[in-house]
Amino acid sequence: IDVPTYQVMHGIYVKTYKRNFAFLLKELPRIASYLKYLFKIILLCDNKKQVIINLVKKDLAYIKESNKVDQDTLSNTLILWGIHWKQWFQKNYGYNEKNNYEVCGSFDLALLQDSENLIEHEQDSITYIAQTIAEDGRIKDSYFYEFLDNLEKLINKNSWHLYIKLHPRSNQKYYTAFEKYENVTITSKFPISEMYITHYSALLTVPLHLRKKIVMVQFPDHPIPNEYAYMSPNILGHDQTIEISKIQHSQGDFGKYFAPIEDPHDKVAQIITSN
Image (cartoon, rainbow, N blue to C red; front, side, top):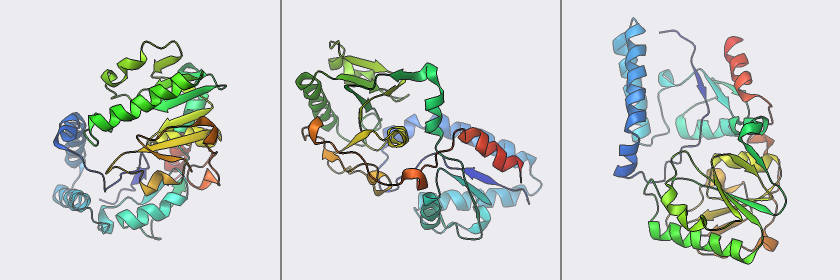
């Protein structure tokens, strides 16, 4: 239909991780929203048949986990967190040097400009960045509770303050054992801490940018994916003891992964309106 198209990097889709039926049910509202906008776009197009064919070809390629998506279904321009991801999109989705690539930085770094949603408590504090790997059925509840027991032992052993930064879809039933502690805060805001614990959250771009210590916790049959493993030298099993004194700082130039651009949203707008 000869319309320039842009794709803005939102996250990293790890193809090797299972999505169970319960997860798909939770995704139904998002699927319905996608279909709603899809039909609106199709109605605006002159060549409706070709648009439908292209979209079906693209979605089938993703479902089959193929990295050979037809060029006519790919976006003209990819807007990436950092230049490193250019190669990742080429390997996984069939983009090539004929496509255009722009860098906008990580949207999560915009959190640092949002004082209303920040908690500043750097000294002697740890933040656990919650994910929904238990809620989505990707790991057994028993494994997750074993990890949380370890987290509880960590704050009992140390006088540090623990922040549990909830995911928008977190089930708070998992964290009721922490409500009795005065040195634990369960919050939806983003704490600035001395150390961070999580699994493989994209929010790790913030502590990486601030050069904080990071611990990544993996589970049986659910290791840290390669797309995230570079973020920390401290990758532990869910039942391993976390010893604060042994946690090392991450090393490397992370600008190629997440360019330090102050306002990524504004950068995306500039890229699109300048073409």
